[in-house]
View (tube, one colour):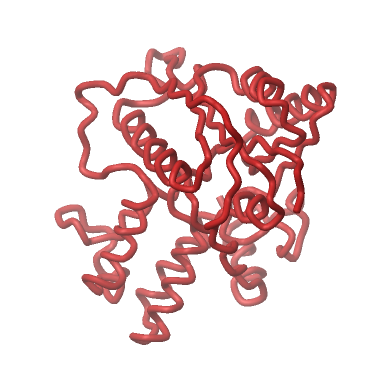
Length: 284
């Protein structure tokens, strides 16, 4: 069993199921403190006066964090939610709790990649080992038949090389034996605007319930391709996107549930098409 303590920085992976870093911490017995940084920049406006994060997204993210906090707390792990600059806050939290390691999933966008580089340099100067693991995508980057810098520029080319030759990995092991560090909770979540009421609640458990509803309770997957562009009815399409976007729902969980559905109910054009759109999402 390892005694090296870990600060696990949650980003767009706000769930417990199919979470490789949580599974790694559980398997190796690392004491864990969990952190999410609500970036101050998200609450600013653009040059045109538009908010970078709208009221509905603020509410959805706050609900997702509350769900993650409760699920981690059930296993003795504290989720600290801080507000500000992630480069400074992750560094501060690593020093405050005297952790030996910081773990996080990578992000694909330019600003986030540059942040990871700056943060890694800062933490190494503090004597903290940094582990950035592959982004939370349908296919693991190590399984692709090309290096990421040479990724085909057109989806059709990507699809032709990946769809039939690269398997989607199994989910990470379930987590039920985490070791939490003793630390104080923090909940620096901005106030949720009054006009932020929406149709869908945030959180991993709500996302998993939606997956179960769409595939297994209503059998709407069977007609997905015919109804997916409809706007009038709740189950015209899967509505998985909000939970996928913040990582409350794993794309691999959706993929493997679709495959299980095909085994039990048979494959058709609709079951293929939902998987096809997960592949499309992974490319972009």
